[in-house]
Image 1 (cartoon, rainbow, N blue to C red):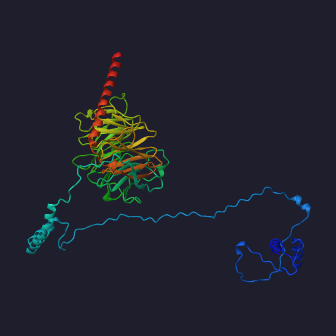
Image 2 (image 1 turned 90 degrees about the horizontal axis):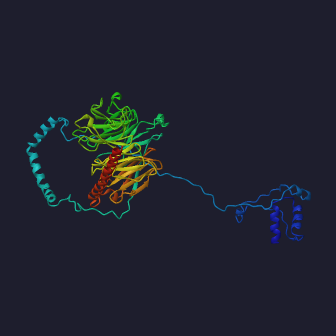
Image 3 (image 1 turned 60 degrees about the vertical axis):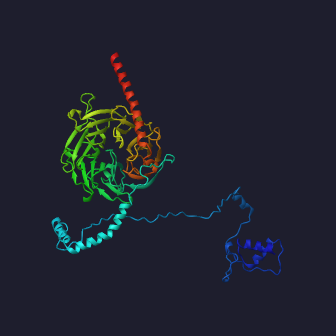
Length: 561
């Protein structure tokens, strides 16, 4: 009976008909064995997942003929048997993927004006004479004298305690922590991105001189045939290092800025060099427009590639250089015309040769001496205060195969300077015309370099493949102590903060990465200054020997000829 029930259910799903036909079909399906007591009149069809559920209601429905199967053997020839027949079923539940971004908060810098208060209404606090007169009047009051004496007795005890205990005592002064066993490392703290849709290359980076709490970044594209020239913005930006989401202030020049530098004596002032050859001065307290701009007839004829503040009695002098072959000195209080100018003429060049174009400038020392890196690969030592005007252009160092992209003096040993060009980094002694140390040739262009302000043997370089290399000459000179892949595109600029802990690296796609170096790369090591000095002196002696051999070879060749 169980077998008959199963056959009935299976057959009922295929064909429905009147009860008489059901009995005939049922007898045929069961081989003629049909129980007299069993008569099926209604068949209910359910899906498998509905089995076992209670029936809610019954309804009588007349059968519907859905069709039948033709049993004629001749019809079989009209069909093609599919053999083998395969059916793939994936027994895995369907899943969906969703992405959720965390809530982002935008910070806005708001200034607050504090005005001195506590004065009577009839006294103007901005007038010094009125405040001085009122102060003398109060000091003669007997009640004032009595209160001062009473307060003096109260504060005398804490003052005596401060004298007895030095709260500013440095317990570990003069001691050095040994970080030689620690592996060099660095971590990314923030990323500052160009807010414009058309991305530009980072052309200059300058740290805020008082604590490095801000970062001034200049953006430009030096390829004059680049399609982005018409679409890109001219603005450069100043960021607060604690808020990378939006710039703290905008600088809106008439032409993109190629170089930008904070004034070390007045942090509110900046000087910049533009793509159209103008030199501009900015005051962050007076908005986004420049406060002074040079006249185009008296400015550079090519883009200004580098600008420096001068160390002197005043905080208003600066110098700039360009590929037009000039070095111009300026006073930002009157930028109508340059105070002085110098043409970078090569004395050893053929007659009629034009001046060498300047692409980098080094003016960190006082006394009028400075260095200029040219697009011809040479480094020119100049002296602004030379007695003879023809001597203002001094020694010329044969540097690189291409432009000298970066030029920096060692802050601990100013006689030594570093140049970057082609695929190498070279270290020079200003008394020797050949480099005392040269790095191995890299696979990609090296674009910029900067010395550490806290360690004499540490400097950082950037390459066109987006790599930041940190060198430590105190431990090894053949390869970088730390190499990081910071960006997928090239890194164009790098600058270290004055504390030697933070490094800002700018890419060609408009991103500025702020990284923090480990203690081993930022803190002075024991006997490091003395060790680096001995190493540089030793290499300088080798360089002097090479110069003598080269001079002797030239003298011998001249004698034979």
